[in-house]
Length: 278
Image (tube, rainbow, N blue to C red; front, side, top):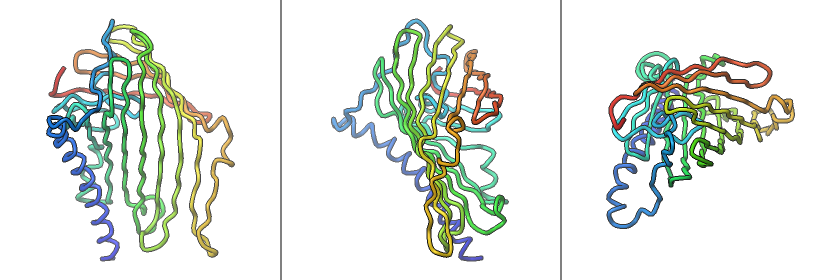
C-alpha cells in the first residue's frame, strides 16, 4: 500500500511540476522578446464588422485564450481558466479540486499556448491531462491517466466567416505502474465553420473524425496490440456539434447539440469572464 501511495504522490507531483513549468516559460518570454529572441507573429484577428462573441472564452475546438490576468468560469462543466499571459491560458475542473486532498485521487488540467497570430490566421497548441483513481471503474488499485494533445488553427475567410482545423492525439493508461497497464491511443481530425451574425451572436458547426484507435492489452503471452477502429462502424467514427453563442458583456451562453454515434446530446454552457481586458 505504501508503494501505491508513493506512486500516486509522484504522479501528482509530476502534474504540478508540469503546470509550474508552463508558468515559468510564459513569464520568461517577455525577456527573450526584448533580446530579439522571439520571432512569433502576434496580432489579433480582424474585427470587421464584428468580433466573434466567443472571443476570450476558450474551449477545446477554438483558438481563444483568456485575457492576461483574467479568469473565465464555466458551468455546468465547472472548468476555470486563467490568462497567464496574452498567449498562455491554463485551467482546471473546479469540481476535481477537493479530490486532490481528500477522497479518490484525481486531477484535471488544460493548457493552451498561442503559437502565432495575424489578422487572418491564428494557431494554438493544447494539452489536456486527467488522472483519477482507477478503482472507481475497475475496483483494482492503480491510477487511470488520460492525455489529449492537439492543435487548433483558425483562418478568417471574410469579415464574418471563420474556418478552423483540429488535430487531436489522445493516450490513456489504466492500471498499476507496478504491472504493465492497459493503454489506448487515438487520433482525431476535424474542422469547424463559424459565422458571426451580430456582435452578440454567432453560429458554429464542427465535425470530428476518429482516424485511428488502438489498444495495448496484457495477456499470458505478453503484450498484444489491437486495432479497435476495425470494430467501429464508419458512421460511428464521426462526431458532430452545432452551437449558437450569445454574448452579453462578460457573459456567454452556448446552446446546441452534440452527436457521437447514433445518439444526439444537448449542449449547454454558461461562461463568465472576470478581470482582465473586456
